[in-house]
Image (cartoon, rainbow, N blue to C red):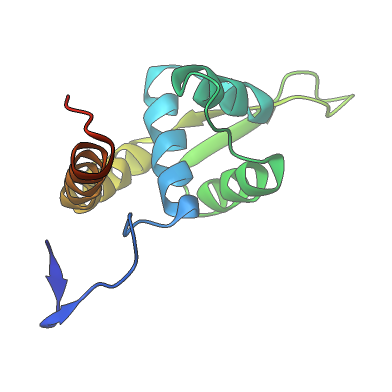
Amino acid sequence: MSTYRGQRNRQFPSKISTTSFVKLYILHLLREKSYYGNEIIDEIKLRLNNKWEPSPGMVYPLLRDLEKNGYVVGWWEEPDKRSIRRYKLTNDGYEHYKVILLRYKSIFEDSLYIIKTILKDIYGIDD
């Protein structure tokens, strides 16, 4: 289990915030193609087999923040209507994605280990 400045992290079972997870997933999806906000929500929901989905109240502020920081670029499909804003990853966004991907890898591995151990110990479920 990872430590920070010699202190144990007492958050359970994951040490990554939902917002950080969704930000990582947005950047991951935008590596593949451009998306608009509701498509991102639907794609995450689909990939997680309808077990969970981020809220629009989380996704849209993250997209605005990512755009403000130059990690994504957005444009209106129909500028006159301003109804659908698509986003794509920038080169800076891809570099940022690679940094946080590495930063969170051990956190995801720790969380997976914790969940697998609980499933095995408490529920008798092996891989």
